[in-house]
Length: 208
View 1 (tube, rainbow, N blue to C red):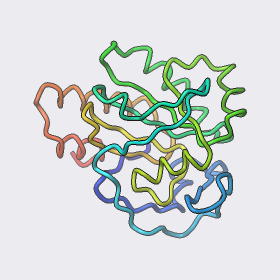
View 2: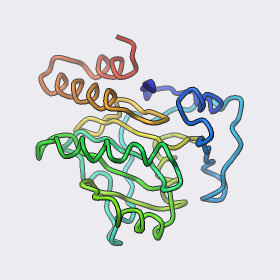
View 3: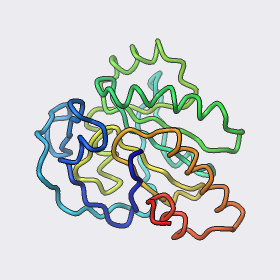
């Protein structure tokens, strides 16, 4: 299971993509290059300061209307960056759909952000029964990832936040059922006042 990282400071070691299960699928994107350009894995990447709070940005949804990320505040969020050409991303989607179906109306909200062309996303969505919103863009979606403080990132890339928009963890690589279950348990303890924000982040980072 991929390890969730504390959002205060994260060192992106892109060569570890194989350890995270990318293998031949690991495609590393640079924010400051062509939207669909793929860079070669680097031995290491500079230390990156990630945001503590969700950034505010808007992207087009499936269907063309624009939506603002902060419009979903008030519910814990799992924000999943994906693409139609990313095999680990496609394996995650049925898991995310099933997890969303289990949530009450005020429960955890999944939000997909496709780093891809609109036509490719819409074609894929026609064959996938999404039950959660999906935003999309090419350079715009990569700018959205950069707004989290990530200069370099690999897909899939997932952000976990509480209902007030505080980032609890980020995960580079494929997520699994255990990651979602752990996040739900942490959110439950936060809501009951049985865990502090620092304890929640530590639990998701695997430090407790």
